[in-house]
Structures are given as C-alpha cells and as structure tokens.
Image (spheres, rainbow, N blue to C red):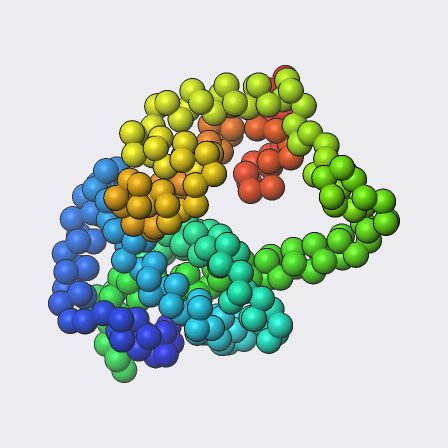
Length: 283
C-alpha cells in the first residue's frame, strides 16, 4: 500500500529522489544474483536499517508514525486506535519506544525482503501520479504496518501491567521494599540454579563464536551499560549497538529452535518458538 503522505515524509528527510531510485534499481539487480541473501545482502540490510532509523525515530517521537499507521489500517477496515493517554505514555517511555523501534524494523526487513525483492513488489518504473518511490520509502511503508501491531501489543501489556499492580498490593511489604505479588517475585530467585547453569553454559558457547564487536556489545550489555555508553566505548552508533543486539537475539533463538541451547520457560515470551518442543529437546 502506498500513501503520498508517507512518501512526502521520507522525501523530506532525503534528497535526490531520482538518483536514489536509479541506484536502488541497480542494487536490486546486483543482489538478485545472490538470491537476496549472503554477505552482500546482509550489508545492504544493515545499511537500510541504520539509514532509516533516524527517520523512523523522528516519526515515532512526533506521532506521525502512529497517525499514518491508523490511516493505513482504517483504509483496510482494520481497527486501530491510539488514545491521547497512550500516545503521551509512549512519548515519555524511551525504553518502550526503542523496543518497538527495534522489533518494528526487524519484522519489516523480513516483509520488505519478501514483498519488495523476492516477489518484485518494488517497481522503479511505476507510473503512478508521483512516479516510483525509492527502496527506503517502500521499507518505511512496511515499518508503518508493523507499528500498528506492535503498538497494540504494547498498549495491551500496559493495561495488563496496571491491573496486575492494582491486584497485587496486599499491604504486606517484602524485604525488597515491594508489596504483594510484585514484591514476592522480586524477592524470589528468577531461575533455579540448575536452570541458570544450563542456560549460561549454552549462551557463553554461542557468544564466543560471534564477531568480536558483537561479543563486546553483549558483554557490556550484561554488565549493565546502556546503549549510549556502549556506543561511546566502542566508537559506534547507538543504532549499530541495537542492531548487533537484535542480530544476536536472532542467533540465540535460532539455536533454541535447533535445540542447541536450552532457554528457560520464563524467557520464551520473545522467543517465538514452541516451548513444548523446545523443552522436549532439552530433556
């Protein structure tokens, strides 16, 4: 799906639209020889991620991303509503915005590869009113669609979290200073010792096989450093830090699918794997 508003928003952040379309056509033709995979494609994918990030960040902070997503969904008869309260909460929650941004880009890259490249949905010779759009515009289009689903998940989790806190305050304070269920969870061990040992052993083996830069990012993250400080220490951008973390997360969950690592059940929320099958493999 295409809207002039979205194309105009992207064009406002970039220049030389005609040149970008011509360069994109040449690049797609070259990448097609590799089947849109391998090192050359990964380099293109990483550059697309990093170049689009500041555009998407700006659209997310300003609310433009949400407004366009609502318009897209309504155009297809899909309900999507962003209340003023939710919009304000998301604007104030930097961590939530960053998490949505990373998941949105990661999912959109897969859709972009399939629809724009493999299925040849991107047409540099498009004859519409405003002519063809660049690859970046096509990719951001997919990000806007992904944002709608991720926002719904975030908003539902926000409601659930508020309800849990309301129900969990039984008035009994735990040693950690928290009340009710929330305090009990905080005071208890998150993983049993044998579970932690099995997870950490597999995790370290996989991490040791990654590139030095990725190992540095992950180990600094484990040590508690925020993305900005990691970027400063390693002399790379914040986007590069997040991208390496996301790529490593993909490696971890792929290892779980292949039963090369055991992931505790409590961590399956983002794994998108079958817990029953995974635990059977672990057994």
